[in-house]
Length: 312
Image (cartoon, rainbow, N blue to C red; front, side, top):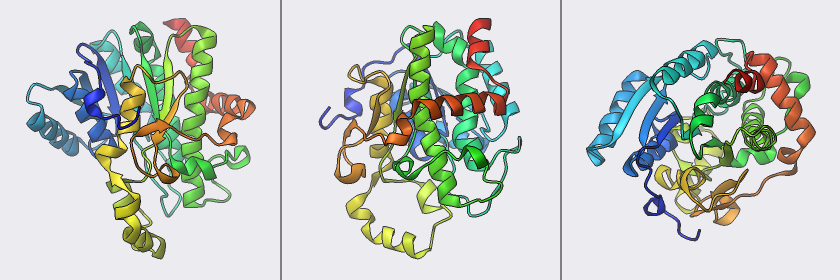
């Protein structure tokens, strides 16, 4: 795994991949690499103009790339359902699902179209519902993988079941950490349930370390003291978006990736470097909390993996 790079991605010819948040940053770099390896890639995003520009950028590098853009707003369960219906109508199977899209540390509490706290709703609940709705297509693939994006922020996260939506006490970074912990717990729980139910889906998680993306540079913390200090240290501590996408790509494509694996950079504090197994905090391994979160997610979204699996 040492110095693993996009050159190590095996041929993905004939495989279909969906990448959420693929119009910029980590998602764009992930989609670029998958397309370069021959996959049929669907770039999913909520900004149609950025989606078209992303397609142009990928085609400039890979003129024969098999790519398309589809509108998907993870802050809207109806948008998630519409995307899943369109995908199912056009595709029999799905080989790779990259749950990448996210928002970070919104200064003021905002709500999704369905009344969820925006970070939990976009980063986690939208992806939970999307993965469930695409389960029939995933199960029809030979070796389907789902990669969910977590973060170093999960280390400070806790699932507050008493105030999951931050209605009583909203703090931007606490909400972000909770959403990223939820993503890691979801990835691990999905693998457990896939094995138990025989779904045949390989579920993994990844984090980019400290990657230089618009999520950080244009984020709500910009121009704060913390942000300015970070900018001074950035050259030593960070890596490019393309490098930050490598753990995701390793999890999505490498024969060496393990069931339920979690991957991140191998450098100091997992901030940068080639992909390697990442540290999972104890709260992410709490089986009881993971099961509670899974059940709460099904209730909140109205989407049940078990019901969809039976119907399929």
